[in-house]
Image 1 (cartoon, rainbow, N blue to C red):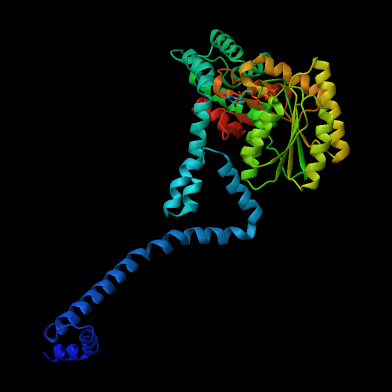
Image 2: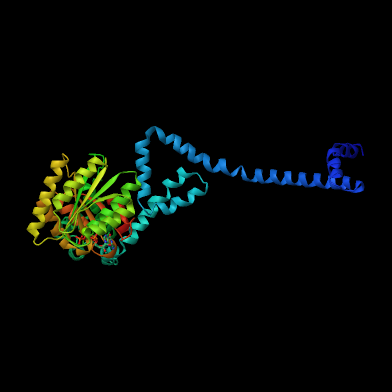
Length: 416
Ligand SMILES: Nc1nc2c(ncn2[C@@H]2O[C@H](COP(=O)(O)OP(=O)(O)OP(=O)(O)O)[C@@H](O)[C@H]2O)c(=O)[nH]1
Ligand SMILES: [Mg+2]
């Protein structure tokens, strides 16, 4: 009762206020108690809301903060690694859920390679069936490695576009490593082929070094329709997402709408495109693009070129002239001449690679349209026969469908 009396006492100012507002004396105390009750309820509700909201945040943010502070010491390397993974396209799928508040560092490392491999497998499905599928049906039910088996294997490899030279070397390797003994297990043939393909691709493998110059000038060449412009667009997007400043040069002035096509890719990637009118001198575009790349302090200049001129000799002469102009403007340029080849053309791609290599000092290859063909084996033939590294492979038309080439992942995607 004492407490109640104290409470009434304490509520006196409120009761007086209610009196001044014209509330009858008998009702003032109950009104004051009601108001007090309301205020306390509101306060409790407010506290509950605050308590429910607070703990969620620190938990979600702490792992990220730690990751960031750890990585700042070695910023360039760490950023590169993260960016490389992010830029690899399919990697985005598994990393997304991590944002929900789970420790990010652990999640970004594990699932990504799996998803990259799966995406590569999908892209190579036709080659898988045409090459490894046929090898598997050849081996099934065989008891030993004999002349017949080796002969049939040779036929499968040649028809799967591995080329005469590479096919011969692969069959020789099988024969050498397994012999023709009664005991040799035909299933081992599969293992030998897989290892030989990896080692032949790995022997010439070398990822593109973007740090060798600034601006790093990359001239993109190849016959018409192989995917040069699309590849440039995809690379611009990939490298901009890694924080590089990219400038594009629309050096294909021969084909109507070529510059327009590049401009669209440039807009998508948010990069500057240096272009002239249709029919203009491609050398002048190269000159302006080189000047612009230097003036704008670009990290990378990607120069598109025509895939078709009036004659093949014209095309090669034009490319040589562009090279000379680039070199005059930026010492050492072009630092990379990237030859784009369309995998669906099979042996033709091999012939083109030889021609371009002789004419314009190709440093690296891009194999496009692997998704639409069973002729992906050509990649082993080209790398092995010409000793040129495959820098990127195209496994679809989407902006994220250009992947840095990884020999082991490529062969695993085919065989596993
Ligand atoms: N499926 C698939 N299509 C691709 C790939 N790369 C390019 N393409 C398609 O190939 C077609 C030709 O690509 P472009 O980039 O215009 O080829 P280009 O070499 O610049 O051709 P020209 O400018 O005529 O010399 C386009 O329809 C592209 O979408 C790929 O990896 N997979
Ligand atoms: Mg083009």
